[in-house]
Length: 290
Image (cartoon, rainbow, N blue to C red; front, side, top):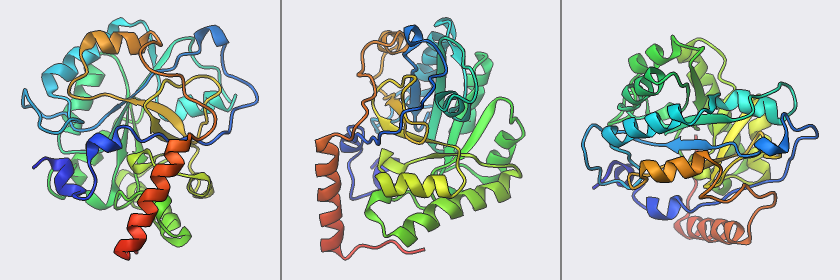
């Protein structure tokens, strides 16, 4: 049984990697020329030391190191999610060819992976599931505090409290998951937490609004697409890196090829998938309450 199955036994990660979410909110003033429109935002999960990882979303450390070598050679300038969102809103000018490296969930192997990122002259955004600190194979409070000691190179963001599908919850539950994750993490790291990542990449218009109302200035979705200057700063497109992603494939992504450009309107299949999940939740009598 993989760590993803242990944490979310009713959901297949093979299905989750295909989840596509989007809400239109293009900036009025793109931060840079359209000729440099590809903005790869890479999404990693666990980076175990083992050469082979049973979880398809885990990238073994040896392969991850090769990935970072590819990113470092690409000539792209590393920025974090908050910097990218500010550029999408026209609040700052971004480099012509940016790249962003993100980690979701924050496992106990994430700090070692971040060290590899930094050793290649890059930076990272780590989104932490606040209610899972010091549990199982997740990051410890001590590890998180060490990451927080490097604010110029490591951005720490919230990833909810309990990692639910936020678009299945009641408004009160959504607000609690988002606001409490921000409050709890800020209490640990001792500085502002301004970025959020939607668990499973799942959100809708109301969830997006709740993220903004909670005081976050940036949010990352998934979409498995390449971001661009007209992307939504509160639903930034990311491309999921898997254990089967070879360095050559990553090279294509960094060139703006090999994945679709993030779309503006929510896809019909996304709405259908959400409706199916909500129906299953109602049948189960589901409600995750804080």
